[in-house]
Image 1 (cartoon, one colour):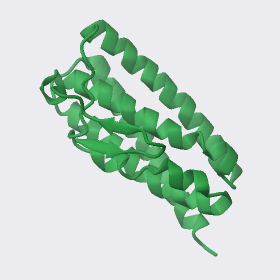
Image 2 (cartoon, one colour; image 1 turned 45 degrees about the horizontal axis):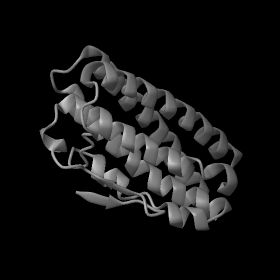
Image 3 (tube, rainbow, N blue to C red; image 1 turned 120 degrees about the horizontal axis):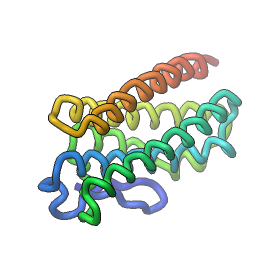
Image 4 (cartoon, one colour; image 1 turned 120 degrees about the vertical axis):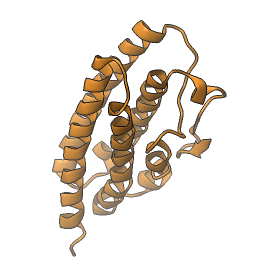
Amino acid sequence: MTHSVANGRKIQSPPGAATAPFELQFIDTMIELNLTAIDAEQLVATRAQHPDLKQFAGSMIAGQQEEIASLKQLRSSWFGDMSQAVNFDQSGAAEGVKMIDLVKLDLLKENAFDREFLTEMVPLDEGSITLAKDLTGKEVHPELKQLAENIIRDRQAKIEQMKEWQNDWSKP
């Protein structure tokens, strides 16, 4: 499956990804979801109107970079040099990624940007939660299960904050 993400970046599942070990699919797919989120969050610094959103995006980027580093370390120790196994057919992955439109975000400023950013980011984080919940129901390394539980908790809190802002900032 191929999904277009703005700026010509194509996110697709490589051949054979679906047959790779499930934990490897999860790790590689979650890394891609995080990279997609970071691409959008980096626009906040120069486009957003609300200082709270700027601070929020900065902390989200830092947290996702730490998460990516943890995922890469687990990948390296468990799977070595195995081929990429990004699988956007996994639960939640495609639904979130297809909402991100960096070109559209890049064209917006101030409150219009803030509202669109939130509209695009909520489904991406919901997709991460769905993917992580799917993993927690399987027999996997305990370290990965703990990471998935942290993703669920952190993304849920992030979504709650973003939905609150959506409600507040959509008022005239």
